[in-house]
Image 1 (cartoon, helix red, strand yellow):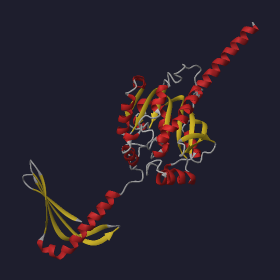
Image 2 (image 1 turned 60 degrees about the horizontal axis):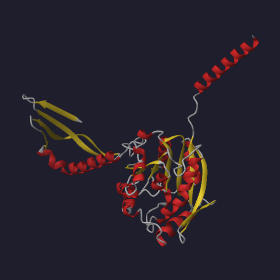
Image 3 (image 1 turned 90 degrees about the horizontal axis):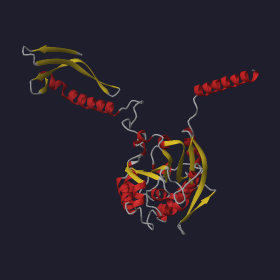
Image 4 (image 1 turned 45 degrees about the vertical axis):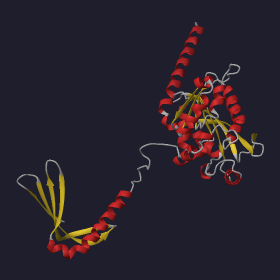
Length: 369
């Protein structure tokens, strides 16, 4: 490659002359050596910068085919480089989210139907007969005394993926202060409108249109309980989701999850029968690949400092419209885990032991006297 540069007296004109010969391609990119002369003018002025490309007429005819080919190949090479990503660069490096945009669209279309007890959300209304006592009874194991009629009074609960507030409201009626979050703004509007009819609930419940990871930093170790009921089968990053749940829990706090097992039976009954044949839930509500087995869920929770207390099966009767507990977890199941207390640092333990030993030695000295 050969080039020449000339600066005019005004200091505003650069002249670049390049000579090259096209030698084909290597690794998808064109190769050149000296031959044809190309004039490349860079003209600078006060108000604008303009570029002019000029090819010598006595060489253009000879190399016109070469030029068009090399032009196309150059841009093909640039497109290849543009689409290439370094292996250490994450696709979504700007933000971390567990929300699936396609799931948001599905629930957005059904936002106005949350409180129709005979509609598509009828199974969730019926599920409250199991999940509300399940949450209440396990939380009451952690407190010595509770107020009659308001057993969860004084507790702060986060309902993740609250939808229209089907589970949030019963927990509020039990006396808890509940924050319900959901990424679908229309769901939050439905929930807010429904709770406004009850002045008591209006004071105990707060709704926010956001995802879990959006409130992690401001809510670290804030809640006595986090609930994700019929939610984890809709997120795109389960491990991050569980990690965020753990971060907002107080030490000793409880995580409650209800979801669907990943089995052949859950595919046949949960998707083929429930969605495509019986129409119990709308088509496309669930994706079998997102279902999670109790074993995998337990493993993720344990790795994030959560101690699993209970895993129990749930069965739905589509003819009666009721749920009941079961030892079989091959379809739906509920899980309860507790966040472990912060371990005592080794240095603190050593200091306490030294203080205790010092006290014991002084007692022995007194006894000798």
